[in-house]
Image 1 (cartoon, helix red, strand yellow):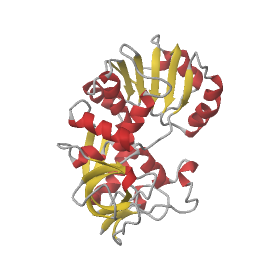
Image 2 (cartoon, rainbow, N blue to C red; image 1 turned 30 degrees about the horizontal axis):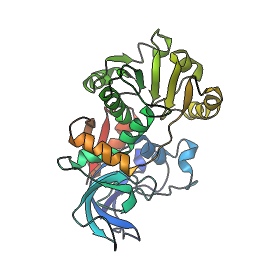
Image 3 (spheres, rainbow, N blue to C red; image 1 turned 60 degrees about the horizontal axis):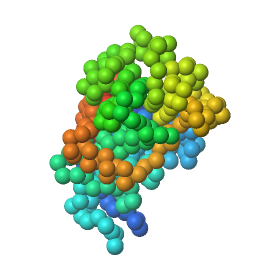
Length: 320
């Protein structure tokens, strides 16, 4: 089968299209004919081997030679007693398993997969697992978003950010999206009530106060975010620079108060139940993954280049 592989950490030049052996599913796994895979920031980190945490399990060379965790496709073969059957359309997040989505076939744990709802395309399904659940879990971190809450999404023009804007608006929040100028129109299309170009305006220097800041690209000192939170506001950090993430994990925990501000990390947690619920919302037209571009497998390196440059408007998808 064809797959995009890499054998050493580095940039997009490390990626190459190759013929490799088709995987054989083991106990509890199914074989999927991949119809679409989406890129996530975690793929970019693993490609480069940066930050250092990306090398866990593969200090000197990559542990997973084929990247791609978010997959959508058709079940080709199953083991005995499986709840799935050949021909089922499925999607899921394989980051807790063997990755391998940038290929024509992948073996995946059945427990990581949900069925794709009727009417949802493979590209849409592949764009959903990590970004959609990170947004959902971030919005629900240490509390629920209520109608009228002021919610700020920093990095609102990316994959998880566009999901967060839509999910927050769905429950009646007033949403501010922050990103670069070329992503402002997209955030407005996702439902943001106000958009900020971070190169022109610093949201942390303004007079607005937020009940929740969900930060996809955290890089500023915690004190700046605390200043624009309400007295019981929450800062939920989904991603960002290593120093900021370490500060949130340590200092943020110490400064959080049960009856006051809460500051902490949203740890990635695949959840097939939540993924099934999110798929139902997408099928009903209540949430729509923002897909920037769809690339053929042979152009996976170009998709990674666009992701690494921060140019992606929402999600990037690769199809074999």
